[in-house]
Image (spheres, helix red, strand yellow):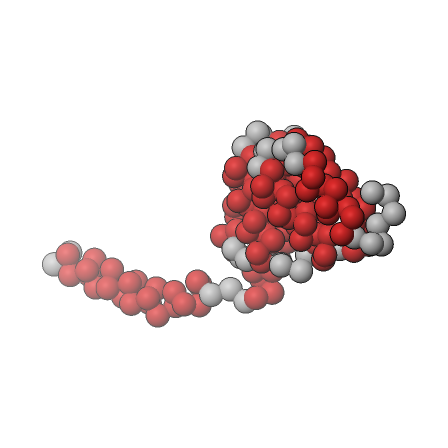
Length: 171
């Protein structure tokens, strides 16, 4: 006799929770955005305080809420460069850059990560793209390209790039 009420109670609870579970599972976009902002700002605060593991935990929470948030990948990339994981950092910057392909700053950061990781082919490709996409700062990009060509001992390529740009007076 005692089993019957327990089973009935369990069935009622499961039906009740099954019917309301979509209400509990779904969050409004405003709630998701607020949580994302909270975890992101908390990650920045923890990173600034030197609590890298807490910052990473908060960034993973951000990523679970919205895996298309490029800012999260940028901060994760910076952390991984600081931790001396350049290949992971480059992959995360590639994700951020892919999410926002017109963001020149992400391309610059990716190119700098590639230089630091000694992936000079990727860095060359990115700085050559940046010369075209960011003409206001092309001298900066040419400077990095010249340094990369010098590391690779491609002196002729550096001279060719410099002479191809008629507006560039420095080279």
